[in-house]
Length: 425
Ligand code: AMP
Ligand code: MG
Image (tube, rainbow, N blue to C red; front, side):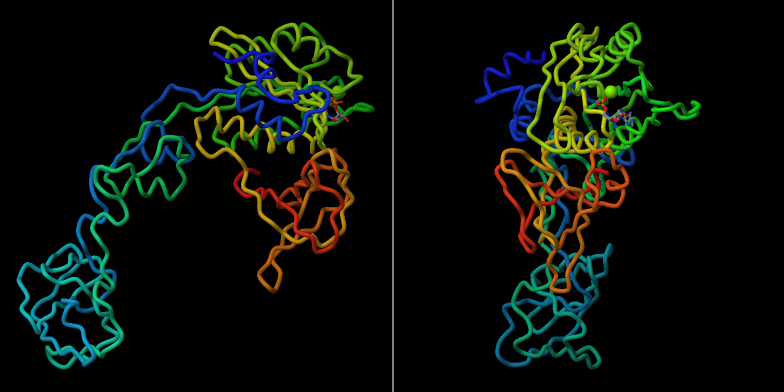
């Protein structure tokens, strides 16, 4: 059961819907949305991008035995000293074929990478470090410490311990790790279902004949892509006219089928008020003015449906504002709904290649192009026209420069925070 807007607002200090800081929006949304609870079992190939429902406890140790990290000769490290060590090779240990004998003082075993360490031996000297004559190996002094080049049983994953925690969003490495445990199926949280539509009488669907003053709908396509990257199930409701009956039908259908609803357009001041009026009529919705640029207006709340409340994100209409508000607010909120542990974007530091004018008292997002300098540091420049309708700037950019609420002007060479797009866009 989700909390009401008023309840959440009462818990937040300094909540003012007319002047919200970007930080307080995040805090608000974290309280508005709840993780899904239903789970399903999927095979590893289908687990990519899904969120683990429970801790995954290792049924085995990986590696299962102490084994060699190198091709070389296994020996007893206690014999290493200041003088060259001469050892007689008494056998061979292969990966998948252990050597079963016992080794006496002055003896060693030829060993391959991944082979189980023979009993009593704890050190491997790589083959390129030794001289081999017939079956005699000479290890020079000073190149090896006892225990070198031995992988320990369970050093990757220990039997009985959690290998992955609940809330882990499974990436390629995690999928491989699950397989390394011999596990073929995992329990994941169900996908979050998100319905979206664009609003506005001036918005053309693809295939419609252009008319004066109308623009093609781009928001549905950026929103679709952003949701697909998150691994959400999507339901596309198309373009909805500024017309009460159509809007009501769209909101009701969306709330009946989805966990979250994303709209774009119709929430700014001076709009023909149908979208806002319908949100108000059907749900518990707050209309915010956020101290940020781009993306000032936003509607947030919940709309009841037969399956429970659907969370509403009413994004502004401008194409860049849609993407910026999605990345800053909607994405972390959806990750939380998905049950993911890590929801905040990682920010990098880069040196600004240019001066930027910035007023303290609002968060500004500039589209940036981050490159690596010869000294290895990161540099960022902006993509020119920062208009909130200039979608080409989002295509050129590889990240967003985040100029924080209290921050002022930026001088050339100053370090700024950058939210990189990789993985999200
Ligand atoms: P609004 O927030 O409805 O006032 O829209 C702000 C600006 O974004 C206007 O110039 C709209 O034409 C434009 N816009 C709104 N929705 C879309 C959309 N789906 N695709 C492209 N542009 C849009
Ligand atoms: Mg509009």
